[in-house]
Length: 232
Image 1 (cartoon, one colour):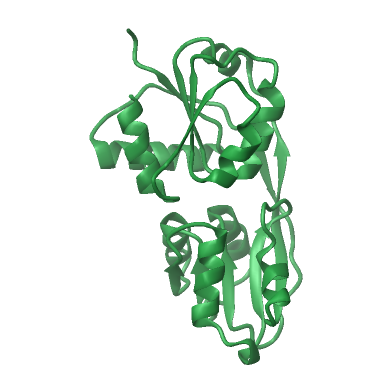
Image 2: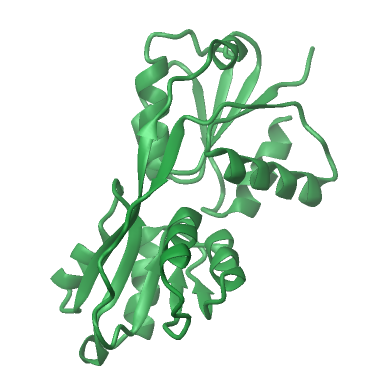
């Protein structure tokens, strides 16, 4: 029986970074087909409020596009996970990781931030599964959201669709990616496809598909790589 192909539908650079991390962590070189399903484009955001006490990043894209717009590295950053933290640190921010989900990031904010110490700014894409700024405001914090990129769906290529008729593994790292994928393959036969999700939130938009879905043991890139290696 042939080994499955890994179908990477994340934006290309993030997909390549993930596979590079997979190879480093496992010492294996899988068969990969790259088919980004989302196109990322920058958006100019409004200036930060005075006395911003923390920046919140829930994605590498948020870090990348914000860093391109602002030279200020004096505001500490709180990040959803290790990959986002690494991107923030590479960009010059003092950054800590919540090691998990948006809820974990919220919990980290509540441990670190004081409502009276100034605004908290959530840096994100135009579409988010969870508006962290809104939740913080509801909990008594000063919080604002800054949109620094937008996502546009890209149709899957015929070559990508063809992989679905053979054993295929698809890592899904976000609900937005899951929704974009589900919309395009709703009528496809996915009985040979296994979708590995980083969280239950990322799995939920896929529930109606006839593919096998698995959730990693933890919402981290390392856990996703470990789970993926066990499926190969």
